Length: 260
Figure 1 (cartoon, rainbow, N blue to C red):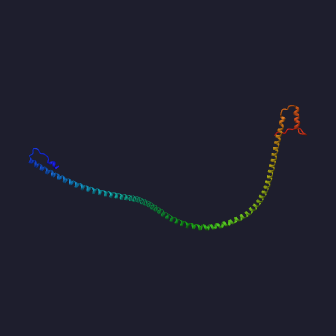
Figure 2 (figure 1 turned 135 degrees about the horizontal axis):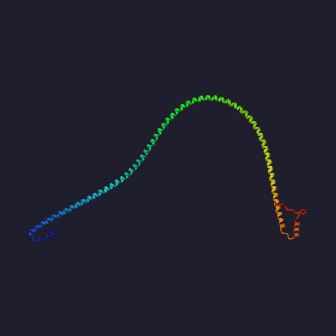
Figure 3 (figure 1 turned 60 degrees about the horizontal axis):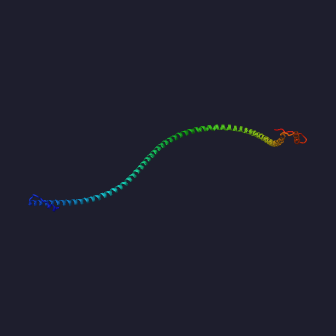
């Protein structure tokens, strides 16, 4: 680069001035190059320092990220513990409310029990007073009852004697009725035997009548069978006379049985 600058031609300038200008230019270029090199070195140092700082910052960021992750884990655990504590707090609050309601209920029951005890004491006092009055009445009524009982015993004794005489009369009457009942039962038994005998005879007569009806029906069928040839048209008077002679029984004339 410096060689290129040295070869720059300056037309119309005297050689000595051109030489001085060239020297001045070279000095300026040299100074400028030194500044550039120095600035470059400074920039490289700044870059190195920046890289180191960036690396340090990245390490710090990584450490901060790890700490943040740990803090998030701890925070998650604490959130879970807090949620658990909140649930326990809710349960404890509900239990407290239930206990308060139970306590209020017990207080109400205690108030009602106290009122009932006071009412019972009042009733016991009233009962004691009533019992004393009833005892006094009982003593008076007992005396009256004893007197009435003595009168009733005398009346009952008299009625018992009357009932005893009436009972004897009733027993005699029952004995007479029992004899009459036995006599009537004997007559009823005899009447039943007679009725059973009559029923048996009626059944026997019914059986005989049925048998006779069956025989009569059989006889009617036989007679009907015998009358069929008689009703047929006769071929000649002599043939009809011969048939009547055959059907006529010995010692009597032929008679038709009556139809039922």
